[in-house]
Amino acid sequence: MSSLSWIRATRRLVGLGDQPSYPQLEALMDSEGQQPYEGYRYASFIVPLVGLVIGGLFAFVSPYEREHSYIHSAFFIALGGVLGGIFFRWDHLISAERKRVRKGAKSLLMRCRSLKNLIGVEAPIAPSVGNVLEQGAAIYMRHVKKERFFEPSAAKQLTKAESAIEAGMARLLDLASPPSAALQEVELSQGWALQVLKEMQALDTAIARQGELPAQGSVRDTLLRLRDARGELEDFEAARVELDQS
Image (cartoon, rainbow, N blue to C red; front, side):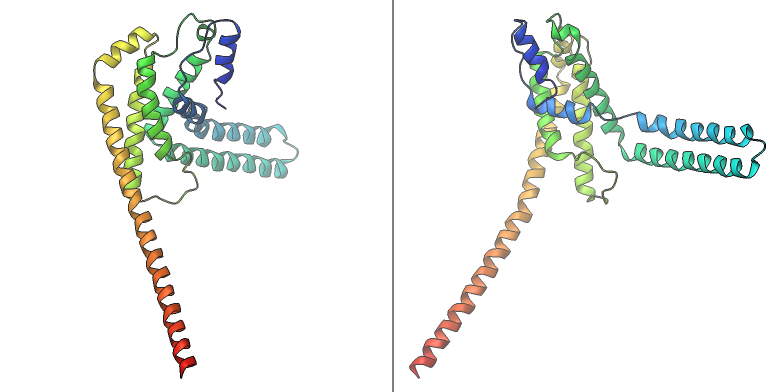
């Protein structure tokens, strides 16, 4: 169930009616809008600084236990450095396009959860814009993986296609950046969003066609193996019948 389901239920309860449902867009907002896009970068600087401060306190607060305080100081400084390096690595494993998607998804998610939307003062997204984003989100959710921190490197072609879809979705989310539905309609009327969506759909079709090839090959290999096994059994049965007749 989407995290926005309670918003629609509340609107119906107070008599404001239901809003259009965008299941793929809501899934994208749930999966990406609640993920960090700048937090790891900030943590890579803040955590080592905190470790340095704590380590300094241990070094100077206990002058009568220098040996133990220096050990504790070195431990916290080293721990802060290691954690800072981990956060730095995680931040660089998130592509710039993915960060833009997360930022746009979070902004849209917060607008959907706002009081203005809840009481019906202002719709968070224009219906025509919502339809475009829904189609783009369906492609994004079909091909873009959630996390990459501990995955081996993917094939270059898949990575390139995935990155292109991320860039396309990030650009489409710019449609929802204007604060009102009327301004979003103006942004959509410029035509660039439909061109981006068309290219994403073409790429989606190309990926689907490429994905069919291994399946067809595996089916062909399976049929060949089954036919070879059937031929061996038929040859064995023919040889047994011939022996029985002799």
